[in-house]
Amino acid sequence: NAGVTQTPKFQVLKTGQSMTLQCAQDMNHNSMYWYRQDPGMGLRLIYYSASEGTTDKGEVPNGYNVSRLNKREFSLRLESAAPSQTSVYFCASSERVAGGSDTQYFGPGTRLTVL
Amino acid sequence: QKEVEQNSGPLSVPEGAIASLNCTYSDRVSQSFFWYRQYSGKSPELIMSIYSNGDKEDGRFTAQLNKASQYVSLLIRDSQPSDSATYLCAVPRGFQKLVFGTGTRLLVSP
Image (cartoon, each protein chain N blue to C red):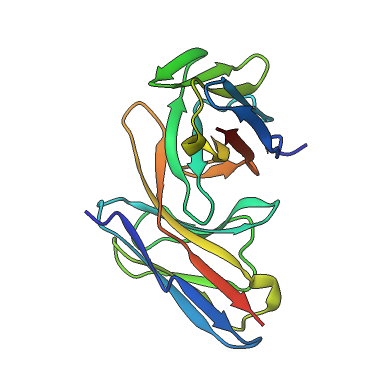
């Protein structure tokens, strides 16, 4: 099992360009997430999808859109990139454990620089 | 007050010592807690979860939860240089979501 995969690993954009970050998981999880991680700010939730066909805003959704293409895939789109979106982006997935809570499994991350 | 607070560190300990990492949270109804480890340039990976007051041990790692005082800690016994990483505390917020602390950087010197 590959777990959670993300593409690309690195990307440099110019201000105003658009791009889509891809994420896929092979663990048959219902829930998927997009985070950004900035120095001193920790992991902040951008968007999440509790199940196929649903998406919801997280803590910092402005400037982003998402698509839950199917149960495996959850993409993040930057329509018009800004330098403030320079960050490391992580995708994660989770499944509720009976009697417990959710463990989230993270992909390797995408390092995005916007010039 | 932040939902989850951690001292950013770095926490420096010599090899073989016990490293103690602390986390406080603001939501009294939180029922489960997670510790993730993140090596530099890598993604977070789960190392411990704890749901009940008291201690939970897993190898060299012990998670301690005190719901009355709203803190959770992670003890690493016999610290190794390979334990040098940032440790993130996470608490559930709403349905199937987690809120993360900013992490504590641990440095274990040989």
